[in-house]
Amino acid sequence: MATFFHEDEILGKAYDARIMRRLLTYVRPYMRLTVLALVLLLLVSVIDLAGPALVGFGIDRYIVPQTQSLSASARGLGLLGVASVYLLILLVGLALRYLHVLMLSIIGQRIMFDMRSQMFEHLQRLSLSFFDHNPVGRLMTRLTNDVDSLNEMFTSGAISIFGDVLTILGITVLLLVINWQLALVTFVVMPPLFWIASYFRVAMRDNFRAIRVRLARINAYIAENIGGMYIVQLFNREQRNYERFDDLNRDYLAQTVRSLFYFISFSSITNFLSALAVALIIWYGGGRVLVGALTLGALVAYLQYVDRFFLPVRDLAEKYNILQSAMASSERIFKVLDEPIIVQDPSEPQTFGKVHGEIEFRDVWFAYNPGDWVLKGISFKIRPGERVAFVGATGAGKTSLISLISRFYDVQKGAVCIDGIDVRDVRQKDLRKHVGTVLQDPFIFSGTIASNIRLHDKSISDERVRKAAEYVNAAHFIEQLPHKYEEEVRERGAGLSVGQKQLLAFARAIAFNPEILLILDEATSSVDTETEVLIQDALNKLMLSRTSIIIAHRLSTIRNVDRIIVMHKGRIVEEGTHEELLNRQGVYRRLYDYQYAQ
Image (cartoon, rainbow, N blue to C red):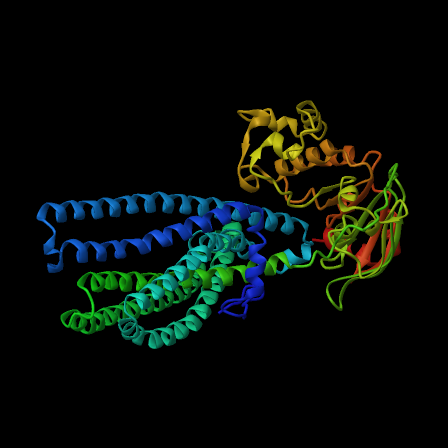
């Protein structure tokens, strides 16, 4: 079975007090509601304990032969009174239980809101290296399924378990008070019940962790296939991919069925032991009634208490399911939240002031993975307003330069400076607002044409959006759309051509008007000749009065730049103009001859 990135199996305790304490920090902002829910739960538990006692009182006082001293009408009125009180208790219990569930639901939803917000904020602050090793489907599982599991714990698990424990303790005391000998008979079934619960605790813990891992695999595989559906269908991979998904799905099904087996087995065994306890009570308690050592009402009340005693015990099987799922989910959520933010703002950041756009790499060494150097001792300086192109074979390290200038990654050695200031000494927000980036495959968000240009920045007016589109030749195709700038764009720009998406990306760059530089990464590839002319004209406009770096494989697009830097295996090997490099008969000449000899 193929492995998707690393499998983040987490092996910890079934109940981890450290994790629970951390989870409770999300409850603190809603402590008043939580206390109210606990008070309501306590009242519900007390009211539930009153019912059997009332039934026992009614039987002994108004039904059994000892009450023949009362008239029939008196017994009838007495039973009516008992029934009325019992009904009142039920109504009060119903109202309190409704308020209790409402409070828990509100608390759970608010905690989910806070946790999702914290996770989304943290994910946005993580460096790109984290996303290089974690597929989208896995992260979606953390934000959706795992958070939902925690919501179920807060609404149906943690506080409810507390209520179940209170109920069990309360009933235990009442059983001992009613008849301690009968209570000892009842408790005979408890040792095997505790042993069975301990066995299933370990089994369900491991099973829930396995389920989470397999669900993350499925989500990751689905996200990958939907994102690459064009390639899947182009290379007739539908059947092979379905077979692979079927394997993952069956593996997930097997783990889920195993979970059901554990739950049903534990519930069935608990029901059997409960029935066994009732049988022992009827046998022993009935004998005590016959000899007059126990009243019939007390025996009936005792049987009802025993049934209510095992009801929370049976519920604990489901609650334990919820708790196990929540513990597994918590471990995985906190693993994401504990992921260190490698690229951080300095404690005392510098400011650029008036930006001129000078870029300098000072003996830069950089590796995505330790020891596997992508850039090796890179040094160069780009003057303000200069247009510089970087060329080289695939894997030479060209695109890494863009990531370092925007500080998506930090260098291991050396420094990247803008206007003489190390980019690590500036806040990322201040740095990136001066950087306009147009990539080979521009990302288009779902929304309108206008929202994709301004990226929901309210400071960019509609007029500025239109002028930016006109300036880069994007207005021509936008004006032909049915709703023009308010035309809805589907996810990732589905329905737009490659050239149209490029022009939208150019309009976006112009609308934000980066002061220092524009970084271009093979932006004119994969388009027709007419669109390429429009794009090339837009590029020339974009580069006016801006420090520009062009990363290109097609050498025809960079003839008019001020300088070309040639890279090979992470090092700079040549530098000069187009004509100078052709005359040197070096790496650039070989690249040029290879392209135009085809």
